[in-house]
Length: 159
Image (cartoon, rainbow, N blue to C red; front, top):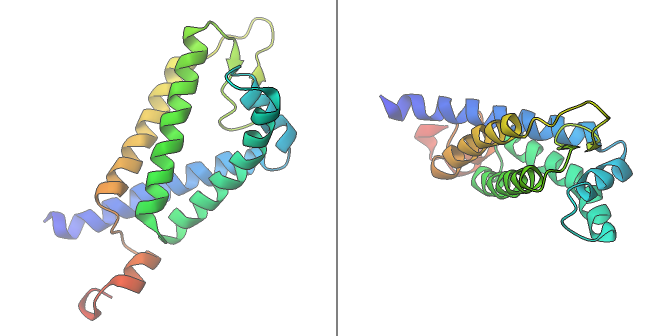
């Protein structure tokens, strides 16, 4: 039974994670300076490094999202996803532990919260763990329906 359901579960995981990356990158790509400020708000690295990472991050998210959407290099895209999500989880936990009052910047410009606003670190970490589970599934079972990987690597009986 799993042989039939597994590729469909992979499709759901792949498209779900693709949507997350495309939305996350798409909300930031129009203002790369704001993305750099969001990275800098974590106070983990020098400002110049944060600016470079902030400028690159939306582009990386979009590329990973497009790869997952197409189902091309799925295991590699899932590995990048897992790595990025692990870094995000550690960064959010670090901000929480140090008492920073920031928006994670995951789906927008991020940065310091306005007076009276409270961070939602617990929710953000839980959400990213859910996405990490999707990435882990794709690492273990990258085969999915309607994927370019399947088209290029499947034998004639599987096409």
